[in-house]
Amino acid sequence: HWLFGQVALETPDFLRLPGYVERHLGSGWKKLAGLSMILGTFGALLAYIIIGGKFLSELLGPVFGGSEFFYTLIYFSFGAFFIYRGVKPIAKLDVIFLISLFLIFSVIALSGLPYFKLKNLLASPSWDKLFLPYGPILFALWGATMIPEIEEMLGRDKKLLGKAIFVGVLIPILVYLFFIVAIVGVSGAQTSPDAISGLKPFLGEGIIGLGYLLGILATFTSFIALGLTLRKVFTFDFKINPSISFLLTAAVPLLLFLWGFQDFLSVISLVGGVAMGLEGILILLMYKKIRPNKVWLVLPLLLIFVLGMGYEIVYSLK
Image 1: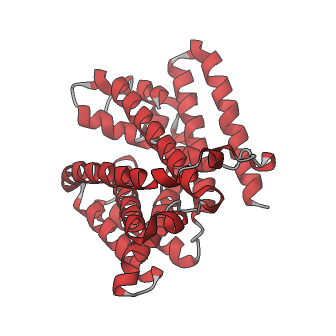
Image 2: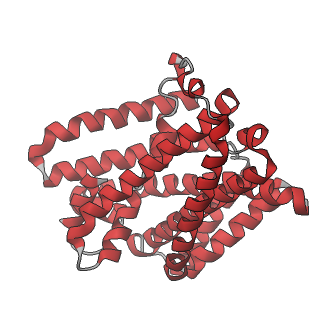
Image 3: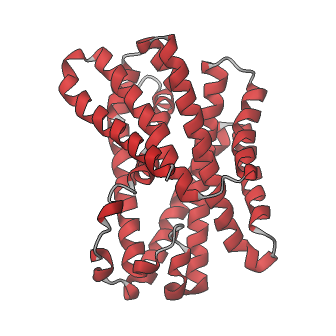
């Protein structure tokens, strides 16, 4: 993230990843960057539709009835509406969402304290699956595509970009770490893929309802932010009509869901390990172009991304 920030600061104009790649590596690389970013963002939007629809179904289904598919369509429809409206209403909602997330997570964490067991965190690892979390972790922490958005919001205060990136990376790491410790410490071996439903035997329906609300808010804000970014990529980097850009952004992930791509963990593993890994490689190549004396920093990171991509591809084909 910091390396991409350096590339952004040394590049005039407000571009997105494909535009930066074209400027520093050439038009041929832009096509690869565009394909990687578009497929990765489509995959991320699909993942949020899958898990967001499940959370909404678990929260409202027992009260109003209806299938998970029905609630997935509702979740998608609201997200598509905000992507269509643009960034201004989202900026106001984000503050409310963040405060709500903090309050709800605090209630869940305090409610789980009586059930927290340290031994749940010390379970023997499965060494054959040691690298299995690579893709999901990269998916959870990857925010490079948002850096041009941050640069644009800072305007003339671009010198603050480095600090913004540092804080923007550190806070999610700490929050995710606390979240993992809290969830696994309570549910242990019963931890579910969505993290929330596995807490039901311990915390009861009321607290779990708050957990589902937390999941909806967290995924919904990410769904909108990524959707807006992808729409801008289509509009500004690929010169596509804004209305068609919106239709592409909204329709493709929904069609993938309807086609049967509905396994959340498989989607985020492949998106994180392959698409975001490829974005990382392109960012490193651009940084090497503007800082040719920093090869010692670039090469080890390149190796990690290449090996990670290979692992996820091989594992997904098993």
